[in-house]
Image 1 (tube, rainbow, N blue to C red):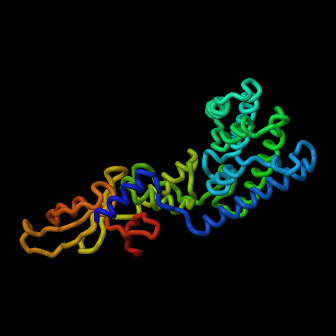
Image 2 (cartoon, rainbow, N blue to C red):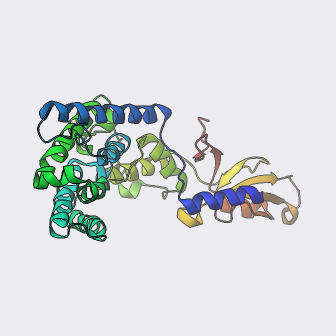
Image 3 (cartoon, helix red, strand yellow):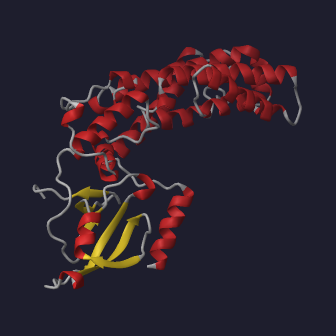
Length: 325
């Protein structure tokens, strides 16, 4: 039990999230990234077969495109992956990087200045794109071939690289309705929302987990996707009745709260006792607040605490047990 608790705390410390995406989604992301980089290479080579390219072809594309491929094909609906973030992030960062190298050549602090200024510029221009930092850095430490390009570095390889990978992102993701790119093109079928007064239950940790599985995408979420996720979670909450009638040994129960207050308990022993004051339940906490601790309480107290029964999913999340199960 202590080992499980240590592993749980270690996972939280390092920020290792449980996966909510299917295996097919992961493979699609990998294939998309492969095609995206191929598009960058062949597209740039076709546009500039000879001019301004290094004899070995190393200047055809910048390494920061690899990072952009991760965002565009693994997180296509993320705020950091949208077209303006990619275009502005790379081009503005490239401009900052070239300018820093022009103004402060051969200084040990020039690379740091370029990245720092690039981050600030992306913030103010609302186009934060992490690979942009690498684009700015490459302009400073890329060597004489890049220095000779001067501000043409923004055109090739950067602008051409960006155009090619964005074009592939639009075309590739168009084959999958749930992950079309840009995110604005995604249209999910969501049931008509209930009127506020008709909502019977508050949102819970399990509702958000279920909604994330239905969304089926790893996202640094946009406001549009966040509202969709919230509505899916609300609809999931309305499907279930609170407080289980029976407390059964070996089963799992959740208190239905959010964040740090959420907890899942497994009943270890729940033998019936005719005397209410002695009818007790022994349990252990298997997830959430007070993880891996054990306790004992009256059956009536446990029923008041437990909002519904849950079961563990293969991906580590918890799902409400319904009549359909």
